[in-house]
Every structure is written in C-alpha cells, then in structure tokens.
Length: 500
Image (cartoon, rainbow, N blue to C red; front, side):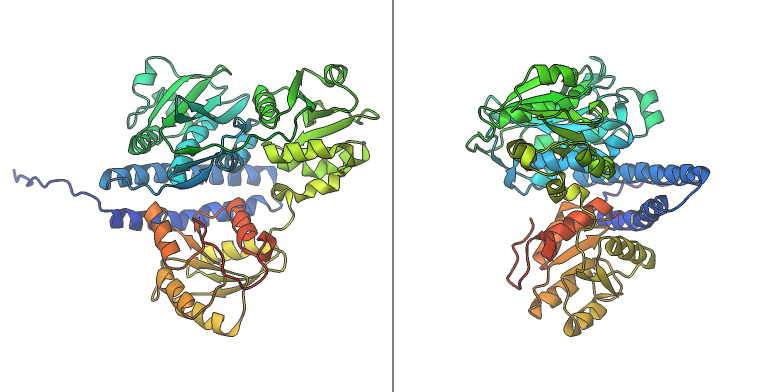
C-alpha cells in the first residue's frame, strides 16, 4: 500500500480570502438581485412561493459565506482596528433600520434606544457594527413572536451594548460554549433554522481585539440578552431637552416598541405614559398632549381635538392618505427615530401628514434625474444595477471596464460613478486613481464583491468616496444615492469629504 506523504496544512492568506470572497459574492449578487426583482413582478401564488424560497436560500448561503470567510480571515492575520469618532445613536439606528425588513417579514418589531447625551465614542465602527448585526441578526432568526431591542449605556466607565429579544433564550449550560466556533446553543434547532455557529465566535474575537468582552444573560422580555462591553473612549453630549415638560402617551401591544418609545421620550426630556389601549391613554393625558398609537390599535377616525400620531411600518405607507382623511395629526415610521419623534410631537396638530414624506424610508425615488456612470463588466450584475438605478429615477450610462469609463468621463458629465473593482484589463482601483489624476471630482462609489475592511480602505485611498458590497441591496443603493447625488445635499463642484 502506497502511503500518502503528510503535508502540513497551508495557511490561507488574506489575498486568497479576498479572491474567494469576490468569487462567491459575484454570482450571489446576481442570484439574490434577480430573485428580488422577480418578486416585484406579477406572479402566481405558486411562482411567488418558489421565488421566495430561492431568495431565502440565497440569503442563507450568503450568511454562511460571510461567516466562514470572516472567521478564516480573523484567523489568518492579526485583527487591525481603525478607530474613529462614532455617534452611538446613529450606529444603533442604522443597525435596526438595516435589519427592519427582515424582522417585519417575520412579523417582529426591532427598535433601539439610548440614554440622554450618550454622545460619541472612538472605535472601529465597521467592527462594532459587525458585532451588533451579528447579535441582532441571531435574535431575529431565533425569535418567533415579539421582537428585538438594541440599546447602549455606560457601565462602570465602559460602553455597553446590549441586544435583547423575546425568543427562547439561552440555557445556563449553553452559555459556556455558545461563543465557541460551531458552538450552537441547540444544534438541532440551529440546523433547522440555518447557521454554522461561527457568528458569535467572530463577535468574541472582535471584542477581544477591542480589549472588551461579550456575554449572554436573560432579557427583560424573557429571551436572550447578548451584550458587548469595552473601554471605548467616550465624549458625552449635552442631553436633549426638546420634550421637557411634555407628556406623550404610547399605545402599542408590542412591549419592544413600547419600551423603546418610552426610553426615547425620556431621552428627550419628556414624560412617557404607557397605556394598554387608546381609551386609557386619552384618559391619562391632557387634550394638549400627544398620543402615539400603533396602526393595529388605531381607531377608524381620530378623536376630535386630540393629536394622534400613528406608528407605521414602511410597508404601510399606502395608508397615509386614509389616515390624513381620518383626522390623524401625523405618523412615525418604525423603528422610531428619537429626533423624528421629538420633531413630530412638537409640531403636534399643525404638522400635516404630507410633511412626514421627508422620511427617506418612504421616499418614492432616491435620485430622480441623476445621471450615473455604471462601470461593471459582469452582464448579469450590470443588468441588476441598471434596473435598480432606473427604479430610483436615475439615467444610466454603462462602461464595461476602466478604460471605457475614463473615455466616457472625458465627453460626459455625471452625478455619480459606480465602479466595480475586479475587471479585465484596468482594475477599478487603477481606474479610480486615473480618474482623480485627471481632476474629475465626481463622487465615486466602489461596487465590489471584495468585502473585507482592507478592501474598503484601499478603495478610499484610491480616491473613492464610498463602498458598496455585493450582493447589492435596494436599501444600500438608495442610501448611497442619497449621500452622493444632489438629493443628498451636494449640488456644486466643490470637493466632497471622504465617507469613512
């Protein structure tokens, strides 16, 4: 019998992992993007079930790819952190709004809250966001009723982030191993729901790199409470007192929404009254007080001489005209934003429902009339991006590579350039450098399947302004269009600040 000689395992390099990331994400971008487009067309009930299953399976595969590659990446090299000022409230808000569609698809609520004056910390925002998305994504996956609450607070000089849910919780025995690689709390249940058991191990690695720690306890909603704590430099801000001496009643059957609303009202200096129904709320408040009522508990018509704000999901925006006609003072989109809550409450009855259309989460088009140069060599991904851009009101020109993009920029003017990174011939990084060397200051956003943090920094160093990772989602594209087209606030040729 011939013996096979033993060869030591080869350590996968960061470059190899970046290549694998690109090769996995490029076809997944096409699969998921086309599935989402198909879901938006006229389908029979049977066809819609098949397409939904296709999309959900693709999203599950993407999650596994992300976890496996990131876990390997963290083991391949020392974790490099890029600390910068991070606004805590903005971080919590972005995490919840990113995951809101997934939660609402399951009939769950996701909300956030932070104490008054929580301010700014110095941390690696990308890594911190990764921990919170991991915790909150797991919470949504394992929760079947209720929802998820994401919070931040100070704890003995440290910053503590916590994600609570109303799911099944984690047993005492499982808490000892759940942060280990492949250490699912309930392997049988996790196989059913999908997962490799790597996400929490990644979170622990990142926490240790920040000189912090992670843990899990029982939440106040009966489920799990995953937390991350670290000695992050912290600069408090002056507390918001915009709702001082104001009373706001909250009527919602979901305790997650109720608790988040209560904390946000109090963070703005107001007094919150929690009621089980509208009758109780009206009895406990004065005629001048504002009442927040969830759509499910809202009456057919608003009571006379009372200011009622209806809590809606983005999918319920079609009811706005009906609510206007029924006498409601306005609406708020869930997950609630503290600043929007204070603004609407202070406006009271004088704020017409049409005013609320300023909320970008329900805007009909992100960049109407914007002219976009799309640089993408993959025909499927180009078709997907062009379709999504057209839906946002954009006019799109396409270039198949770096040289073609430079040629287009010498004869035409654009509001935004979307630049793929890996292309035959001239790469996206080289093309970006050439474009900037020509003096072109048009905002440029990387559109890439290279998903690691060093890829993002390489794009910024090459002259890019922003970084979008494939698979491309409509929400991520809308946000980028809002930041970098005229609708995002820039209308002249002045140099833009880097998005970092």
